[in-house]
Length: 439
Image (cartoon, rainbow, N blue to C red; front, side, top):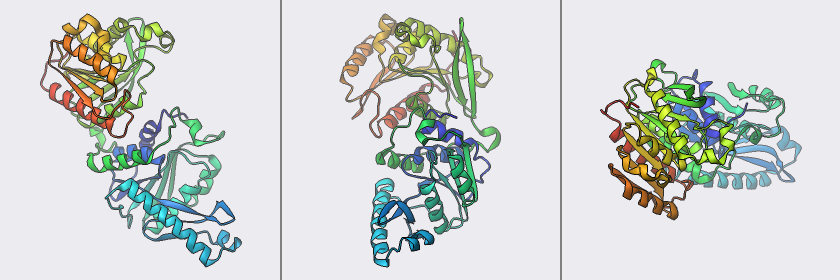
């Protein structure tokens, strides 16, 4: 089983955790890679999110061999067998423990900033990692959670080495893994994108978990979002996509990705999640088939991409889940030009461009009637100028929003969140009480 990235893994893992009662449940990510997975799980289950901080204590002459671990709350877990085998003195243990606690405290300040640790006393602790190889850290974290008073300890990961899973099942109340592959060389082999997670990213996810209202838990029955993998017939081809419709949706946003990207784009999927929590349906789809994407001519054929988007719009407004919903376009990079090209031919309610090339829509810009928001990174100076030139050709309601400190891909901490917030506000303002889009 392969995962696109940790966001994809977290959403899929959450589907196998719906049986856990939401009352008294705390989701705990293992820093750093487990936190993005845990964030998606916590959002899906409507549960609070925190990190479980542990520091393994290595034997002095063989540091990779753990004789115990320390955690917050003055927790010390010792493997008595290894401790006595290694003949570690009380003084040596005290010094190793002190260094471990200093590191735990440093990471707690780094990750939580001024927020307090969530108490586990009498609660169910759901520990989440991005994958489990040897299980040493996960085992120590479970022991720390138990020592902090957790009434029940559940360990979950998208992928786990089979022999490790056998051992871990004896130490936790429940182990949930989506995949136990026979050929296990490392966690990263099961991810298309396994980029390192930074301390700042962990801190930002914890901040968002506190300040964002989690969506309704998928176990709540008919109120959960409808999440549908779709195939969209457009002309002679079928395009693959993912349609998500929250209960009571007020509009639907169709995404047009840029060159070299796809419906699996982590950035567009993040924006889609923000829109879904605001009550908007989203459709992420591939503008080209896998075979067509091999041609650079197709990738930059704005006329072709625009026609595809018009066809997809016709399809989406006839879907029963989207009946009567106004349509908006969200375009990134060259996808923004395709969105504006399509908006010149179909009546949509709003367009948003993120880091886009609206200039590639050429003379059709003057025919766009949908209110258009152009979002550009403050450090993306060439694209800022291209957007300003395009803005001068627009005759519709429009605005240029520059996100300070952002480069073209909005990779800097907090910048994608700002772009998503601008897009969400624009769509919420313009996709309410407007006529149904028709081609």
